[in-house]
Length: 102
Image (cartoon, rainbow, N blue to C red; front, side, top):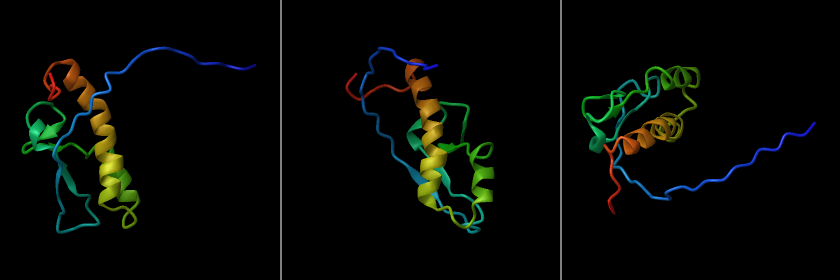
């Protein structure tokens, strides 16, 4: 038996850019760096003061299991990437984040 998936659709194909800042804690690499998107400060519940994104629930256990192999690139790819994939489309659909050309 073969299953074939198909579909159609389109995407807005718009590029959104955000400034990223991070703090490296004194206990690094035992503690993951804190990632922040200052432009989005206060626009979502999954964010701390100063635009720091919430990594404690999902990324911190992964970081703990992989110390000292993980670095800053892992925090961005495995922590910030999934967070943005969920939060940014939601903020756009609610009209909180607007494209610079709109």
